[in-house]
Length: 249
Ligand SMILES: [Zn+2]
Image (tube, rainbow, N blue to C red; front, side, top):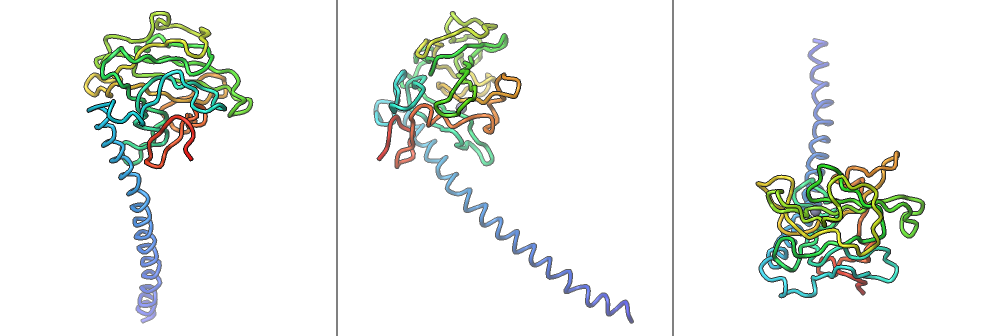
């Protein structure tokens, strides 16, 4: 008899937390969905624009940025290449993904044609195994990150199958700590993704990478190890969501 009573009382005690948990879950799902929807719409819009760009780069000159330009007087870096900034920092290609840099798609629609230059004075390293990438060390970046050493990373400078590197011959694999002034030609845009089956579309991936505690470069594929290139380049998002050179009023 006593145990019966206990059981009857136990039921509502269990039910209430269960209902609360369900309500919390429903709320979280609704909130998550709402947060995800604008991002998905944004990605769809970016893909649509990118398709338009690939079809005819000249049709949208207002999307174009030019290599070597300082977009705002206070911006410490030069634009590293020409084209359309199709994907920006913290953009998402798929749910949960966060892009660590800028993808700048060249206006020339051909491999090994659109120049890539150093965005700032720095010390160039190309690791022995790198076919398509170089990284520059910038010892002091007081302008934006006081007291910090940062790196600029430039990649996809090779053919789709990785067999042909488009990096300037002045920087063979294994180059280490070679000083290059801002504006130095580093190579040309390509579409090597690291996997021949999935070429990237001709572009430069450019990112600004933090240093590790021992002074080397951090893993740039993790967005937490990078900075938004916008303030460094003077690039901003206009009302239509396009990343453009200069200030938007
Ligand atoms: Zn990228």
